Length: 131
Length: 131
DNA sequence: ATAAATGTTCAAGTCAACTTGAAGTCAAGG
DNA sequence: CCTTGACTTCAAGTTGACTTGAACATTTAT
Image 1: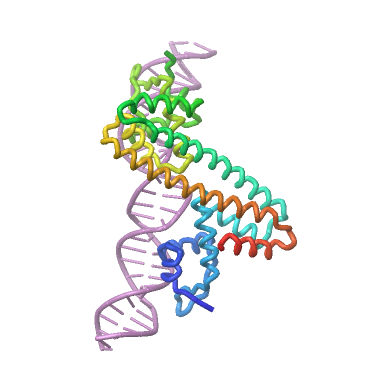
Image 2: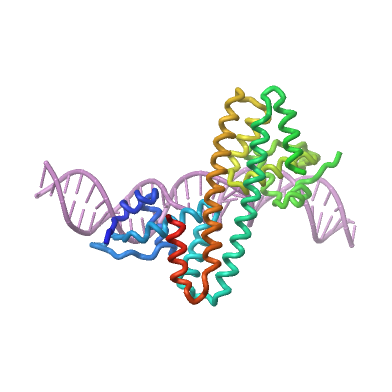
């Protein structure tokens, strides 16, 4: 039912129109229909953009997202193909999680340092996180 | 005691020599001493590089890392300055954690889809993760 | 002693993910 | 009618994080 112009979609997804054109250009969004040469989107694009943004913030490149969305949904590959791909990305996400946790505890420890003994405290904290 | 050439450090940190020169150029590493014009590092640089890499994998830019390392260690700022900075980054890390968890559960759900009902399953999964 | 390996600087190139600018189209409002 | 504003394409520019290449010096292995 509801259809949107490029700037309406951009506003709802918190992107610039140029980003949407770019996504289309690299095959991340399919070409929407045109009305007088102008792009006209239907609501489903917002869902796709939401997935794209979550994936992106989780550290996926647009290329990876494109492959996942285009490989999985049309299921062109023979089952195991995308299965392997997703497994690999899950493993990467877990590695990233570890790095983030490590960095978090490092920063949390640094926060506990008193201002006067800062240099020493930092040093100890650094050592601790290397071990 | 132990001193290393640029390529020895690079190898131990799993970086290229050019990356070390670049880090020096942007002020992320301080200039090491030179022997016959060649950089000679001592072991402490490995610790610093380890922190840099963890931070980087946790989503920090080199600029942010430089500020943290140069703002905190010499403690040039008046206490609260870096305190605020670190707090802000901790908040960002938590946000990123949420995105990663979200993406993980999305991918895990997709993995559970049967190959035959794939399209339907993806659709349902997508809906679920939007709500 | 000479050739290969490693080092140096400096400028320019690369890739991702967009943005910006130029030049043009088109419907709507004053 | 004609200007404003939102749209179009296409090419070129931007930022981050490096890498690569040229031109040259020094060090190490044969």
